[in-house]
Length: 388
Image (tube, rainbow, N blue to C red; front, side):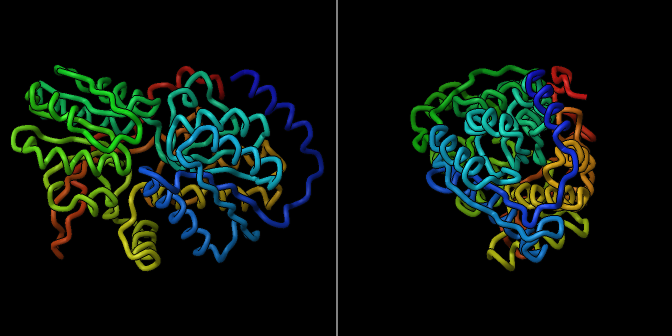
């Protein structure tokens, strides 16, 4: 981390007399195919909606968004990031869904002194010892939503829990977060393959253990298949399901349907949040795309709004890294989640809420906000970050 801080300091000496850019280029690299495609599509659509609302501009300058599919492959992601940075010469990057992809791409982005605005991936490494001046996260640190639902499961007195999650950095952060606040018995941690869609073996394990609660984190198509198979196996009669918001969001609900009713989940955002920015976002997203936005879409939207505010603050002089960093830290835009601030490691300090899936007044199966779990909650790794 110190090496990156030194490189950032050196870049400041080159700022000198800079001119405003004539356009802002953003490289949006995301998972747009395979089992995780729905997540990347929502980030992309939320980001593009914000650009349309801003009349095709960021900070008052014409915006060019270059989109690429990482195919959920670290190797492909590195190749596309290299193109963005060296050929396209983008001013910002965003869009990555999965933490293993983010960890693969991050070093190249940071060495190039390009600001990365994460609309999802929040690995613990970049929150702690590997924190970086060029990395900002508008979503959360990976552990946070798991911490929130872990606290709720603890508070409700469930004493025998099984955890199901993929074996990759985000999955391991999920377990760490849940167990940081849940102090009861974890009967089993079941790790699946990333992208797995058949859970017969895992569900047989669950049936044998007979837990009173099951916490799962399975992004995208993984979670959709898991919930369908869990309910079809009859396990929902005796075991209460809990999940972070991204495993129980509108994309999953639409695919699974009423079988998800009664399931609790945690999130920093919900489509029923009653503030002007969120009302506009939800209405415009439904009008544009014909579906309710997910938290992934809200994060893509906020990523664009953050870039817009920062570029406006520096009057288009995006090569002035020091000024641009300060502008990003200042976060002069109103988020759809309500107020939040960046901690010293550039991760959010924000509220986390409890949601339950049920039917709204129109009979639609959807999430409803029912309470606050954490207020102004920071991540657990900020103390390991050397940035000030």
